[in-house]
Length: 456
Image (cartoon, rainbow, N blue to C red; front, side, top):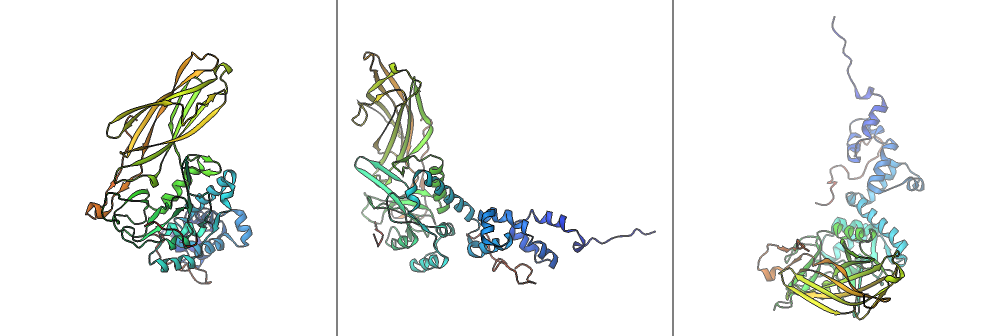
């Protein structure tokens, strides 16, 4: 007797196991499934399937859906129609912006009011027509969220202050940036990202690979002071693309890597190993490279460092002491060693009492791109002036960012980045007209001289 055979048909399968399978698919696969049959088209629009996708790609919450008044499926479609070309960048950049604004609301609230509303697609397209270059999608995506900031101080992209020098970089809105788009030799096809009123300093993004630059990398321009050709401009590299440049900066801000001083973000970098304790006193160091005061040709690299001296709360009153002098041992990347001694610190002789913190900033220049410093302070007890002791200053490294020479100097189109390491020591089925616009067939990966803003 022949065994009966029942044909397994998709249309006869219960909905629950099919929905369970569909739950594991991304939105592209759900769209493709909707082509197969009317039943799969209906199941692929099942509202719970789209909730996690809305959360994953657009960071949407239940509150967002309730406010929209539509289903998760239609909410996803709305966002995709508006921002679909940026789907690989949007969640990363939106999260970064949300984290940054949450942090600033607590620590630097006045910066929040300087942020501009996002630009529109039409506005960004007009900018591309104006400058004659394509803007990268990660840049466009970020500017759809916030169109930079107003031209105010302090700047969103960090500050630095020394006794006779101040820098604060504004994140330029796209219209102002287009006004500073460079076409001159040495800076062709470069779009400014930031601007500092006090120094004229800007970070730029290369919109085309030209004159030794790589496409979409960000950099500080640094004129070659030894070259006859004014188009010889060296570059301190700050990021390989806008996404890396912006999200790295935000990470350093929200994690506390960059300190907040007088309601401004200071771009000091603190290596957690740069801490040393001697008895009740702890010394920690953070450093920063200043490109606006540095050059590659001739080699002149300017650094500032910020030192924090703290006496423990548990120290006895008898431990009160005063700083008398400092000693530094400085080692450059070419092996040269220099020793420096002097009274006090930046003209001060701080008295340390239990729980007290003393901070100061100083600076130094080198002819090599990396070096480290270490040393000690000499203190005496106020209760027993004859009791003199030393407090260790931890070794800290100062390393300039990667830099690249221009083609006009190297006489070759081969890019070469100089890097220096620390010294070891130191359509979906359209029966009912629902579709995702041009989803079908598109590439979902999406991304295949000094100037002043005109209205300052």
